[in-house]
Each structure stands twice: as structure tokens, then as C-alpha cells.
Image (tube, rainbow, N blue to C red):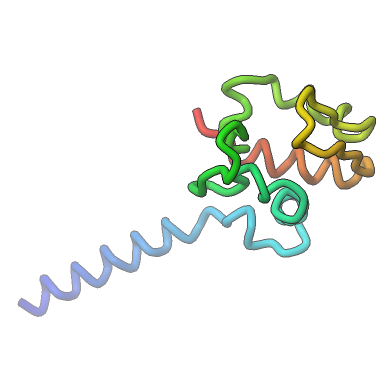
Length: 114
């Protein structure tokens, strides 16, 4: 019985170590992915789902994690700096600094689902 408990403890410790070995991109408060999330959350979450599992508040707003399924997201970076405009009146125009656009792009790349 004691050997089973010891084996289970080792297995749990190994599993926990494996689960924590890959850092969560949002855990680095000063990293570009975390900064990109903060930008998305403060500017876009009123309509779009910006997280890994939330729902968009606006029925026509695509969740950010699904952008790559509809658009080549690498093409968004230039639009973010020059001024992102859409064809509908409900979405405001956004224009980000180059650094903010880079951070937002790193975040968008990090959350895309296949």
C-alpha cells in the first residue's frame, strides 16, 4: 500500500511539473503577449471575445481566437498602426502605436485555435 502511495505521489509530482513547465503567456506581466491581452481587453472586449473561452458580447463580433480562420492575421498589423476601420458604424476606428500593434499581434498569434 505504501509503495502505491509513493508511486502515485511521484506520478502526480511528475504530471504537475510537466503541466507547469510550459509558461502561460499571460503570466509574464511585462511580456508582449500580456500587454497585447491588456490592449484587447480594454479596447475590444466590449464586443469581441478576447480570451480563450469567453463569448463575444456583440452577435456579429468574431472571437479573437478565431480570427485566423477567416483572415490572415499577419496582415492586421499594418492596419492596426494606420487605423483599423470597418464597414459598420458600431465599431469605432482604432489606431495603435507600432509597439501596441506589435503586442496585440503577439497576443492574437498566441490565442489562435486551429
